[in-house]
Image (cartoon, rainbow, N blue to C red; front, side, top):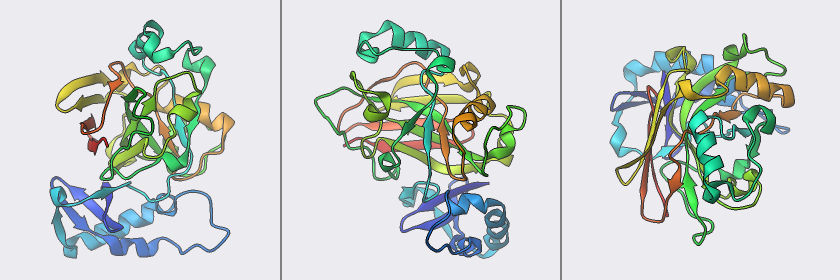
Length: 283
């Protein structure tokens, strides 16, 4: 199942170019009161939402995907966990180019560990990216994003995929420079994901997916998730050793080689096989 959100805060079931407005399915998400539970409540109750979506589809209004302004696929993503230099060729690319590493220490991911991006960096895909420091180089990074579906702590690699709600295409935007990763990657609008949530039952193997990114139709990045140093299950195992993962937490799994600068007025098209294409404007 492919679930999207679109303006103004509607829930949609995506089938090809048709989006069925199934917003009433949100009624099965329990109403929360303060103190609010951790995590995104749509994701926490995703099986019930999916069942209600299936029931509603037959009578739901049908809309054209191209006519909709897409929002983040779920409203309250939690921790944004990201994997640095997690593709073999990208690791070498960063080591070889001073414009990418700026004399920062670059380690293999098993040694460097994961990092966090600020939740405030999230933006709806239809809003687009606003450069925080236009005089500095700002780069694109396409990534496979894993959405955690239930609370996880010290999860084994063998069991890790049982904790996945689904997958999205992600854009991790970064300013190049000497600062820590989490600072350079956390300005407002520097994280987005979508175009919808593809539920885990539709994608039993995330280890062999093509990724591509173009800027104004110029190909920049092209790879496959088989090139990941740590795959999805290994990243969940690694991350859950350090953090309790909650429904709606997301893991950006890393970007392949071919990162490059973007500037105001350009359009980024980022895709992951079976997950759709993010189209995001740069301001």
